[in-house]
Length: 218
Length: 200
View (cartoon, rainbow over the protein chains, first blue to last red):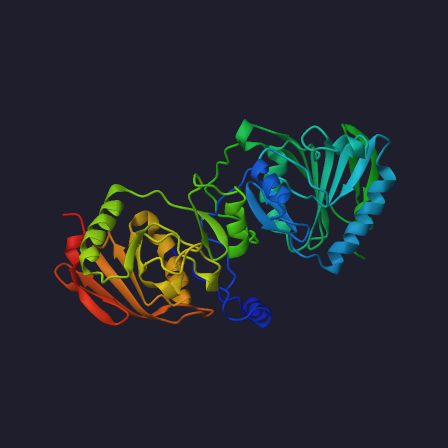
C-alpha cells in the first residue's frame, strides 16, 4: 500500500513559502513510527533533546506536536477557566495545560481538575487516582479529541471527560469508564447545548452547574 | 515496560526529528543497538522483520557484485546511509559506496554512494515507494529494487535530486535471462543475469 501525498493545495503552498523546496512535502505519516515508553520520553526530556520549545505530547507512545491555538480556542479556554474556578471545591486544583502521566502516554489536557495541593506533584505528574475531570477545548482537533484522546482517557479511567466543542457549539460529557482491561470505554455520553447547564461532578459529588453558553465564544 | 498494542498508523502531527536530533538520541543512549530503527523523512521508524528469501537475495547479489568492484569501492549491507536533504538515515539492504577514507565519524552520504539496492517482498511493498523518494531526493545515481514477488529487478536512474516530488526519471525492468548492467559513475563493470538473484 502506497499512500501518495494528497494534493492539499493550501497546505503545500504554506510549506513552500516557509521552507525551501528541499524538505519533503508534509503528509499523513504512513510509516510504522517507533513508539516510545513514558520512561524513554522522560529521558529525552531530561537529556534536553525534547526541550521547552517542543510543544509535544506523548499519546499512546507517539510523540505528537500540539497544534498552535487560534483565538476562538483561546477565548473558550479563558471562559472555561473562569467558570471552572467558580465551582471547584476546596481540596481540588485546576491545572491548565499541564502534563498528566498514564501507562503509555503523557498528554497535556487543556484543563485537569486534580486532588490536593500543588506540592503533591513535586516529583511526578498527576495520573490515575488524582484526577476528577479532564477538559479539552476542541475546534480543529475535534476528531482526534473524540477518538484517540477519548479512548486514552477512558483507558486511564479518568472519571469524566468534557469536550468543549466549538465547531458544533456543544459540550460533550463522557463518563463512567469501564469494560475489559484493554478495551475500556466511556459508557455514558451526554451532549449539552446552549441553554443547558453542564453539571460539574467532582469525586462523585455535583459541586455546581456551568451554562454551555458561558463556555463557548459569543 | 508497557507494551503498546495497536497496528494503527501514527496520528497526524507526529513529531519529526532532524538528523542532528536523531544522532543525539543515539549518542545519548535514547536509541540503542537493540532499537531496530531508521530515520525516514524525519520519522523514527521501526524496521520490518525480514524473511529468509529476502536475506538470501542479498547474499546472492553481494556475491555477484563483489568481483566486479574496482579498488576503492565497498559493499555495505543493512548499514546506515545519511541523506541530509530529506532528514533521513535509512539502512538500505545493500549499497555500493567509496571506501572509508574521509568518512570517519560519519555514515556514507549520497556523494559517496553509487548504488542503493532494496530487496522487496510483500511486507515491504509500502516501504519501497517512500524509500525511493528518499534516494531520489539525495541524488543517488542508481537505485535497484529487487522485487521478489514479481521476480524482477527494477533499475531506477536519473534522479531529480532535492525536489518537492523527488523521483527517478528512468525505470528499466529486468526479468529471467536479461542482463542487468552494473555501472559505477558511468563505467560499466559488467552484468548480472536477473534470474540469478531469485530463489530457484
